[in-house]
Structure formats: structure tokens, C-alpha cells
Length: 173
Image: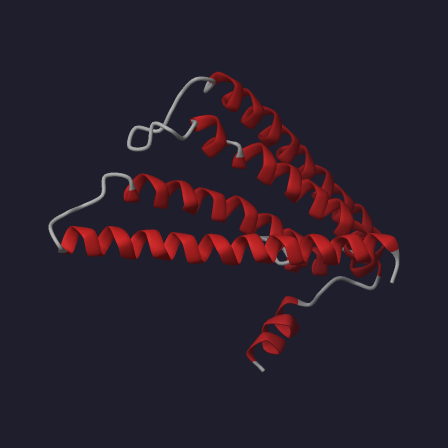
């Protein structure tokens, strides 16, 4: 196995573990919040923590999807592009995606810096910088996943792309 693929597999495993932990934690927090309200003794922090957890799950889950090549894309567009242009279209799509993610990471870092000294309303011991750090970190992980998957993406484009109908049929089987 080459180094790029080895690193991608490692990143995939780490992200899958993070996503699994986040799903379990969010589920526990929501159940705790529901149960405490049902018993008439609600915790004030469960809604805020569950919302933050959902944002974290979104960013880390997106990076995991990118690592697996399962994020939102338009394979049908690539399939109708003439074969000579498929690699160019795939590369252009990657450049646009990574460009957006660089902008997102940069803006996310600015937001984290602006939030210096801010604390959560219901849990003042927790910094808002920590909770919002998922934006630049998630964007950076997404960029890394895109770059690690780039050779495979370009190879798929050289071979003619992925037929979305065949892929959907394979998923059903």
C-alpha cells in the first residue's frame, strides 16, 4: 500500500472513531435532557451542548465523507463530459472545493480569534473558542481528505468517471 493510501486509511479510521463518539455523546445528552425534563428537573445545558455536538458531527462527518469520496458531488456531470475533458473537470471541481474550504478555514480562524474570552451561556467553564474551533479544524481535515483522495479522483476521471445509475444500483444490492 502506498503512503498516500496508508495515510488516507489512517485518517478515515480516526475520523470514523470521532464521528462514532460524537453520535454516542449527542445521543446521551439528548436522552439526558429529555429525561430530566420529563422528571421536572431540566438541565439548562443539554440543548446548547447537543447543538454544538451536532455542529461538530457535521464538520467531522463531512471530512469523513470526503475521505471516502462520499460527499456531495455531481458524477452525472462528469459522465456527460467528453472523455478528453473529464480530468480537467474533475481537477477544476477539486480546486473550487479546496478553495472554498481554505476560505472557510481562514474565516473560521478569524471567528475563533474574535471569540477570545467568550464563554457558553449555560456552561461558563467552556470557552466558545473551543466550541467554534470545529470550523477551521473540520475544514482543514476536509482539505486533507480531498488531497489524499485526489489521485483516486483523477484516476476515476481518466477511466470515464463513475456512472451514478450503476453506483446507485450497486448500493441497493
